[in-house]
Length: 314
Image: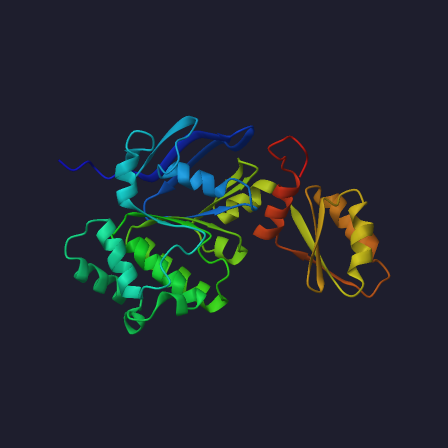
């Protein structure tokens, strides 16, 4: 008898994991709905990869509970592994095999019946037919990425776990990859994807931000931005580095970030921030305008106020 489809593809509570004296995942609670693209953001070493591996049964948590596709992440990890597609940070297929041979090998691992038909279907769905007999080692980063996604989808999983899948891939290939993810989500496939790119984060249905093992914020992009209550002003002009140093010491200014020829100045005390910006630029040729606070402003703020695993400020 088939079990009913669970409401959530991932539903975990208070996951913890230590490696030696380092507490790398701290009370992580997360829910990913079916057919949802959930973005997992955070700096290097923040616990993203470890959290993903805990959620899919590749690692056993020290404490905490949860399910993945309705299976218990501790007691039923073998069933989870057969029903999810996991794409690691590093390309993990064989350079001296062709694309077709790589996919056929993966199909053998999953003991798939009708392997040839499954491989042909995968080649077609990811647009790989024309390169099926090309050696994998000769592929560009974008084509390797496409092969890795095809391998993840070969056994028709209902959940994809993608660990920084677009790192080092050109912008056009990244765009194509995300269009494919949205097509998969439209078919009801859930996606948990970690990324460093803010434009990718904005394409997710929901987001979570993790730093030093702790989830600092989660929700839609709009909800996360609103939860931080930051106002942001942009200053355009020359010699912004000197102004940056001045503003950092001014009451009302929580952070300053240079974006090319523009300086973003943010703060939670909106009135004090506005007064500080106007006072600093009065009588100069600098141009000032109020800006809608973006995800990048918010995540820089979250990181600045987080504390590392050993207790020292970041």
